[in-house]
Every structure is written in structure tokens, then in C-alpha cells.
Image 1 (cartoon, rainbow, N blue to C red):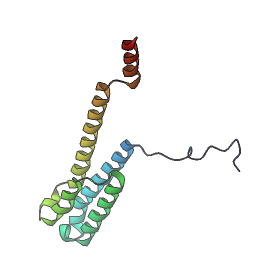
Image 2 (image 1 turned 180 degrees about the vertical axis):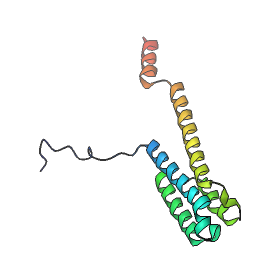
Image 3 (image 1 turned 30 degrees about the horizontal axis):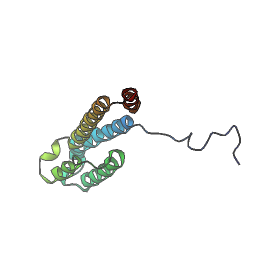
Image 4 (image 1 turned 120 degrees about the vertical axis):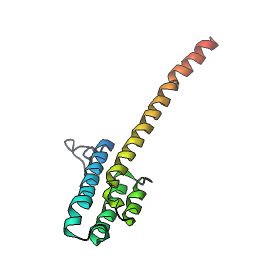
Length: 131
């Protein structure tokens, strides 16, 4: 039984905004790239280490969970197979590109919405023309 003082179900749910997801993904990408470029070469075998592979799979899984699947994540996995290419911050570049694409899509959607007439305007003009 729900009391009047209790909030309705769903009101206490935490909503994560897309902006915060991108910020979290970018921080994770920067940390992962810094570990792989700066820290790992000093303490482990570098690009050939199991720690590097585990980090890549973990970061990839978190990125897909945070932002959904994007083709930009695939080069981050494949680039680790080529020697020397792992010195490029692919995770950071991938998240930045996903963010750039999402902003472009949002702007295009907003422009389309502005060009479409509102339902009320369209039906009002029809009724006025019929009078």
C-alpha cells in the first residue's frame, strides 16, 4: 500500500543524460590510452602484453555499454595488432568521433523539425480555407 508521502514509482529513478555518458566515456578513453601509451611500456611487454589486451576488451565493452555499438570502436581493436600503431590514442579518437557524429545528427534532426509545419498550424489553415 502506498502512502501519500511516498513518491510515485519511477520518480526516484536516476536518469543519465547522454552528455554525462560521453564525458564518462571520454575520461575512460583518455585513461586507457594513457595507460597503453605511457605506463604499460615501462612495466609490461607493451603492445604484446596480456594486460594491454585485457584493457582493450574491457574498455571496448564499457564503451559499447555507455554509447552503444559504433564502427569507430573497431579500429581501436584492430590497430593493436600492428606494431607501433598502438602509440596512437585510438580510444580517445573513437569517442571524439562518436560525439561529433551524434552532435551532427542532433543538429540535422532539429533543422528538419524546424522546417516541418506544426500539426496545429496545418489543420487550422485547412479549416480557414474551407470557410
